[in-house]
Length: 388
Image 1: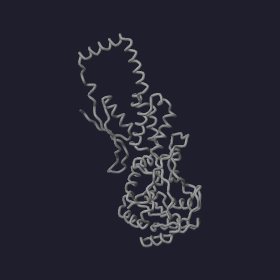
Image 2 (image 1 turned 120 degrees about the horizontal axis):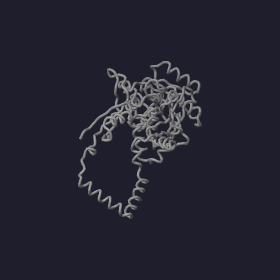
Image 3 (image 1 turned 45 degrees about the vertical axis):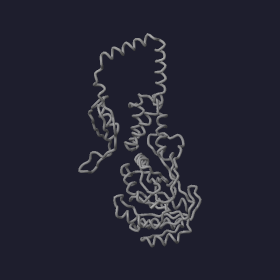
Image 4 (image 1 turned 90 degrees about the vertical axis):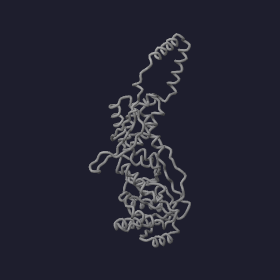
């Protein structure tokens, strides 16, 4: 049996290449996301690799005697009108009940959805999963309705978005924000302080304290202290585990303690380990949120999620939605890494540019889709705090 492997920038490109090269004999076995192109290891792009084999069905010779016998049977069946009628009815029932076999091919509606998802920067594996679901579930008649197809796609995307909701039954609740440099952690801490401390966005006012361990960026420290002064929320700066424990001890009467951390590259293993050791002073009941920017491409978000895994973060905060109209990369990574999202931010304004994440709000940020209804929210049972 002859096997083949083809690569391209998108699932559509590779399928077209395979069909042009091998025709209908090509049968697909596997597909995976890869990094291709580039120069001296740099500037590589996300692509797709498909492997498969060439079917021998077209090359097989049929037995003449078998064909003659088959012809006799068919002629005999044609003469029996009763049997012929039964066969016709069976074929009609089969046609209605089968998930249209033609839908397995590249229907124009499927091709349109692939282009829409690619335009929104969804990953190749996410797109493949969505379109395969459409092919198996929708009939040819349903595929003729572009509005129905689009709504079915939105339902599938929405069904892969998981939300996180905090539990404030235990006091004080310690919330820690971690993440790479430049994603807006300090501003997000100020926004959360405003929501909970001032009672904005419909929240009941709570007693809030802010602790920052970001003593490397003087501007960031001054920024959070300024926010604290404006909102009348105490802000403490710590550098050691002992100092951290003292500040936590004197904040035990608060409802919420928000911890701002230093931005770190996901590859900065030494400083990440040092920061995790410092954060261990918060104990196992603290909740860590990974802050990621919606402008980051899918492969980088997945790497960030994996490298910050030792912090045992319970959910994510998606920032900078105002800086992009293509959040497919973020939604792909969240789905493929099975991570939830708690909050989204879409600007620098404090406190107005933050809200609890919702499926409908995220879907409305997709380009080229029309969201006409509220979509159900997937909220799993939350584990309490971190587990070391």
